[in-house]
Structure formats: C-alpha cells, structure tokens
Length: 253
Image 1 (tube, rainbow, N blue to C red):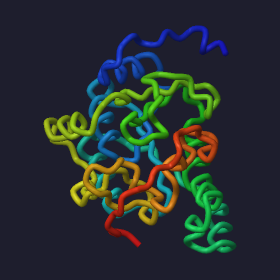
Image 2: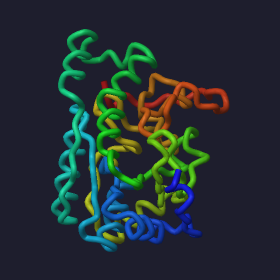
Image 3: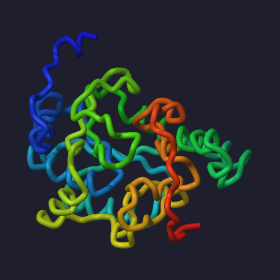
C-alpha cells in the first residue's frame, strides 16, 4: 500500500519514455518479461539504450518452438544481455504428463489452463518475486481480452506491483517499422504468417487480417485466449459473445 501512495505515474504514452521511466524509477527491481516476440525485442532495444544492464527474464515452458530458441540466442548476442531463464517445476510437469498425457490441454478449457498454470503462471510468480515493477509487450490491438489495457497500472494479479505496458497503443505496422529500422533480430515464424507465438502445440499461423491471437488455442473461443500470466481467471473475462471465426489453414497439428 505504501508503494501505491508514493508513486507518480508518468504523463506520457510514448513507449521510449515509459521504458525510461520504469528503469529510472525501479532498477534493479524492475525486469522485462520476454517471450522474444516482436514486442519484446523492441522493448529490449529501448531498455538497453537506457541501461545496458536492464534485467530481462524469460520462461522456458519446455514446449517452445525451435525458432523461439534461436531468436532468444540471437537477441542475447545482439543486445549483449544475460537472460534470466525460469522453468516449470520438474515434479509438476512429470505429474501432469504421467497422469494426463502430453496433450491434455486439448481436452477442455480447464485442462489447458492447468497446463498453463504449471508451465507459465507458476514460473512467472517466481520471476516476479522481489520486483517492484515489470515491463511487458502487451498491446490493445492483440485481442479482445486486451482492449482495456493501460500503459501503466497496478498489477492486482501479482500483488499490486507496477505493470508497465509501453507498447499498449502501438499497431502492428509501427512495430514492424521499428524492428526493420533498427535491424533487430526477430522470430522467423513471423515470416510464415504467425502473429502471436507461444508454445509449439498451441500456436499456428493465421489468415491475413485475422486477429493476432486467433492462432493461439484455436479450438477455444476468443474470450478465453489468455494463459493466466496477465489475467487471474481467463474464463471469467467479460466480453462480447464469441464470434464465428473464419477458416484458417492448418499449419500445425
């Protein structure tokens, strides 16, 4: 509560200024959550221009695409950063796969959320321990579940720490322009019509013009497409009724 009374949020929506504010106000107790998406690579670039020692953490769920690992290593070398990797608890993954198989997440919304809790949510909670703030690549444009995002807010899902979303108002065109202009490494799955990249079994390419996260958990309704990293109970998000989705080519099993 003391933190809430003492922090003055910045009066700007400019991404570079928000990154600078976060690092100057909270370093070393602020870190960038990175899945090596376009958004995250752009934010690393902004962050290291302010502080070359800016903290970056990532979660290896154990089921990421090979292209994601390659991008992670390219980014590590390009930015000269030490990525703080976090992993799921071995015993939890073993129990899940021994009891329910390798693809239990396809069986129901609850089963998919259980997998996400084990592979993503619990490691994130450990990654955020001791931090006063974290920086994410969330954008309003990404999906219907993110339309009300703010640039800076208190993260009630993670104990009320500060959550900074510098790219909240950016469009995809702005993002690509930044990546190309700065000649930054990026995940090559984007060249194959992927728009939002998570675990390999839960991610596929999307049709031109489709919502970015339509390629995530495509067997679920749009209002359920959160893994729990940013929303406590994704199945209870209040949204408009699910709309019919156009057919998309099956680039993944």
